[in-house]
Length: 504
Image (tube, rainbow, N blue to C red; front, side, top):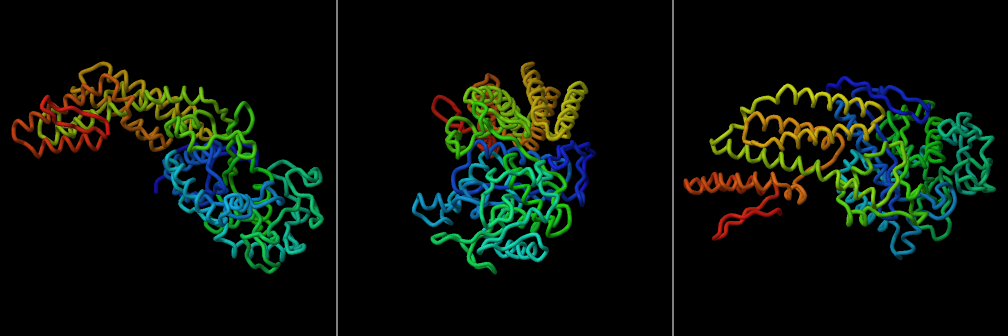
């Protein structure tokens, strides 16, 4: 596999520096991202995280890297205080619904992937579940006890932060400065308030539980990601991603329990996305200010939501408002309309060529040098933006420039001219590569595009070609035209007054 020449730099949370990206074993890249805890529907905050890492995966693959993308599903062990106290979030949701916790996990796992599919977020290569890796988590915990980095207390096992002097390196906190009660449980079982659970004793009535050397219990939240990441990507990961709110204690704890067991660096590059805010306050289920993706899809196209997320850098907060989404909706319509118009023209060109009439699409000349030069600059600036820590806002600016160029070309008219068509299609190809392949923005025929003047004219031309084929008793060619339009989402209806068309 050939890696494109690039100058990709990323902001490494661990070193607090912008660094050139150099994977451990190129062209392979092992990437792990903390997945959802499946006790409720995904909201816009989840969209921010998983769209952000989706474009990172897409761009790495665009550069030629062979990415193995692992994103877990947390179905046990994530407690309500995000540390070692409270109820299991999945069990709490199951109790409210009076169903088994695994039924809750299954239900919301399916809905999560359905929501991500609508946002055109690529499925991970591996989606391991915490409940499916209990044996590995027990073995890792035993290894830490044997190494003097963990201890058992009343059926639970805790990591001993005093045994690991590097603890706090990711978050910038020292163990001495950590105060009891700051997102960690104050427990008599712990030697230090910052010690965190590797294994929790199951209280009476706790449904999700497994046998272990320390009694019946369940894994701590933090060890799940460490174990699953290393199982599928090795002892050292190239990239570990997640939300900035998980930097401490979750990711800090992951590093400690991983490196204490192996003696090797756990992650080369830590990447953290910022959060979605509402009026400057974090959007979240616990705060009650969240908007589920299912509700958002009722108001806006999923691609509008995706574009809204991409208009802010992944490391910057994204402030939500309905007005902001409405503004993105209007801006995106222009891109989709140009792409749809160009696609219809391309279908026409291919159909005419297949019938042996008019312009031969296969002999279309290259785009004019001026057009090629403009597009080359857009490509170059797009790459520069993405190489600069995946700067999607600046990359999007080049996408809009390409769309504007395409509209200017189409506005000149005479789209049956071979050279003009070549110029238009060059712009469309650029959009397909950059907007669709890299940024994941689905661009297809929409009602907004159909309402623009150029599309009815194009479709009328296609209908005329079909009428000529039928007149010449070339019914096979006429059917080919109908099928071509149907594939583009346009349906023809023959009536006594002529042929009409509609969008499916």
